[in-house]
Amino acid sequence: MAERKINHVHIRGGNINAPLARSRKQYIEEEILNGSSPDKILQTIKNEFR
Image (cartoon, rainbow, N blue to C red; front, side, top):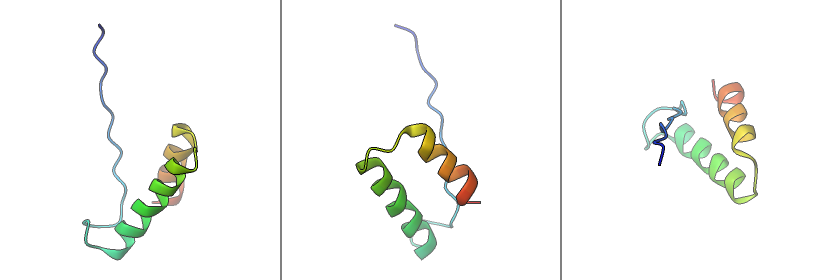
């Protein structure tokens, strides 16, 4: 079985107690539940969460 590297993407917005970070986390979780593709979610993080 080939090992796969896990890639991590940092979502900016401060620590987990910051309101901005919580709202961004909630947005991403909703996108996942709505069935958005991983590529679309990555693009959202890279383009909108700068």
